[in-house]
Length: 114
Image 1: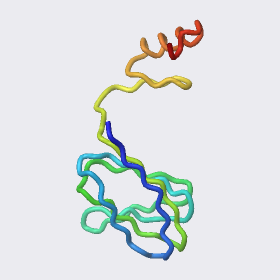
Image 2: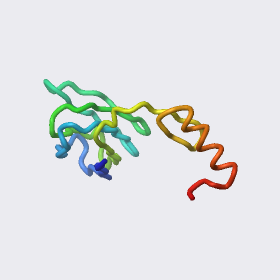
Image 3: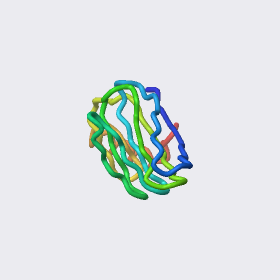
């Protein structure tokens, strides 16, 4: 599915930035440097510090963030929810444990990627 990926630096402390974001997308905001508030409905704010993550779900078509200090840097990723089960083990991410076991067998027998 399509994805959104933004690498944003906010030069001014306390600056508010509105980013257009597809309405039905979930979103992950990773604060690389600085700190932010994710501003939601009724101006409710969720504080996110350095090296921390905020998750949002399908709420509106704009992501609003406010920098807590100058030169704040954030990485924003998003996409449509897959609405599928997730199984993960080691480097493999599949839908079921059986698929994970098959991927391990394929890897160990040299069939991985063929």
